[in-house]
Amino acid sequence: MLSRKTAIVTGSTSGIGLGIARALAGVGADLVLNGFGDRDEIETLRRSIATEFGVRVVHHGADLSKPDEIRNLVAFAQDEFGRVDILVNNAGIQHVAPVEEFPTDRWDAVIAINLSAVFHGTHHVLPGMRERGWGRVINIASVHGMVGSVNKAAYVAAKHGVIGLTKVVALETAGSGVTCNAICPGWVLTPLVQKQIDALAASQGIGVEEAGRRLVGEKQPSKAFVTPDQLGGLAVFLCSDAADGMTGSAVTMDGGWTSQ
Image (tube, rainbow, N blue to C red; front, side, top):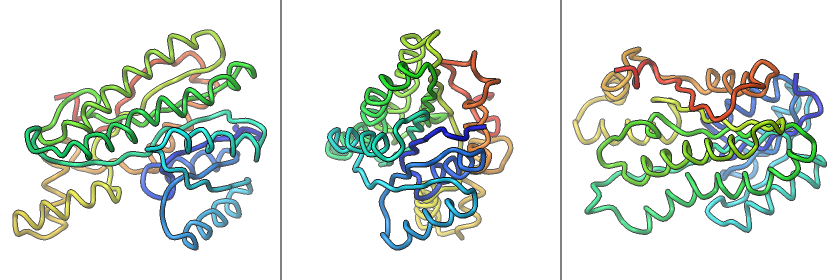
């Protein structure tokens, strides 16, 4: 379906981003992976995806808190593949604290990576997408782009901003062949969420498995984590012809969280 298309997926060396990258590769897209980690492990990952799906896969370690590195990431993709057809803005970080105790440097970091990087990446890929008359911008927002939670001021603010930015880009590109949509996951068992599970287990003196059940059951009526593979399937749909008329949407996959 996406043969001869190129996708950048930020934060794709693990978790949601990796699930989406693998799903896009599975329908023929060439990939630019992005993320931090051990160099040898990333190279092994890159080779395994390329071999399994028969696509070209490269990696760029841009620090998405730095606008110049985002520009370099997009330029690298264009140099390697001649085009960027799909941008998945997935990279994110988290910090948890009450507003009055929230460190200003952590606020700045969360906003930079979770929101400002979405703007910068989109800013650089849109001209080429418009020129070719086809493009997909997929922003990984969150249920926290729709509802709040205590102690997550920066994350909630950033994700609300991502949904707002998604709508603006959709309006500005309407009718151009470019679409922009947001995916809003609930609890997904990723390294980011695992840290919260571990912290809950430590604070309440319970096992990690029990902490995971309590965490997901507190918000999601399904009582089950969403998986990266499920989110990858949704991203593939948003890139399909069936989704040509879908833009500016914020699509939840949250086990019923926001239906309550």
